[in-house]
Structures are given as structure tokens and as C-alpha cells.
Length: 234
Image (cartoon, rainbow, N blue to C red; front, side, top):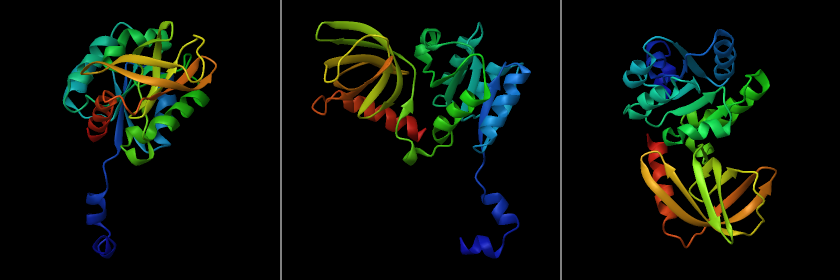
């Protein structure tokens, strides 16, 4: 550090960490402009893509990818997730809701920008997830991830969508009525992992969402911890 201050010109420039990059894929001009401003506030550069987007997602390294949930969404997400460089990038969806995002759950969409795209909501979402994009994991222990989750227990059986996940539990979105303290099992997939089943207990409940804490005596939760550790390392 002392040497860097002693010779501030070339060494300081070369030692500067490369900025995180977010690919804005096949978005309209107004959306690109709005999202570029939001990401820029948190030190994240944006790269506009239209032609050959899938090839670039395979070839180039990005920390995040924003794309419209339309006809081209699946092949674009497949390109990103099959790339060694981008298999763990943060994927944002635009132009759909949580139910539509579940169609692409095998690709692990991390978050959804509300539609229509508006600055306050977009900025709020970027603020909530930018630590993950910037790899500042010590301050961000929960992984935003939207995937289909089967809930079974105490006469209950229904599907929910995950919101965030940690090694100790997960938050979910569902209109189903479920009480605090309910014991249940959650069953879900995590990208490349086979389906995981873990026991848990409902620890909080809000309108259309609830939280589940994994049972510390269920060894299967270690698979979740291992996956999260691997996700963060990549």
C-alpha cells in the first residue's frame, strides 16, 4: 500500500480492480438508459447487446445479465449458464412476473424488474442485489433466486416460488395461508444440482410471502450450504 502511494501514476492505475459488468440484452432504448443509470450508481458498468448476444454471453465475462422474458430468453439464459465464465452471473428478468419467471426456473433467474420498468422500483432492486453483482459476499449472505418450490407438510401441499436463499433457510412467495411454526418439507432444484428436499419451520409470515428456517438436524441442508459456497466462489 505504501508503495502504491509513493508511485501513484502507473501502479495505481494497473492495480485498480476491473469494474463489474452487466449485459443489457435486447432491451429497448428507454430501458437501457434507465438501467444503465441505476447500475452506474453502484459502480457497475453496462454493456449493450443486440446482435450475437448468445455468442457474447458464452465468450465474454459478465457479472450480471438483464434480459426480457420473451421468445429469446431461454436460449440466452442457456448460453450464459453453459458458459464457464457466466454460469453464476446474476440474471435479471424484465417484462414478466414471478409466475412467468417460473417457466425459466431451471436457469435460476435471480431477480425480476417490475413491469412496466420504473426508476424507483428498478433502483430499489439494484440496490438490494448490487453486493452480489460486485462479489461483496461478506455483506450479502442471502442469494436472490427464483425457482419453483414444492411445500409439503401437516395436510399442506402447494407450490411456491423462492425469493432469497441462505444456508439456514429461504423466503418464499405464495398466497397460500400458512401459520407460524408450521413444520414442513421444501423441495427445489438449484441450477445444476438434483432436486433437494429439506425439513423446515415457518418462522415469519407476511402478505403473500413467508420464511422457512431449515432444520439444523437435517443433514440434507448441507447440500444447500455447499451449493451457496460454490456459487459465491465463482
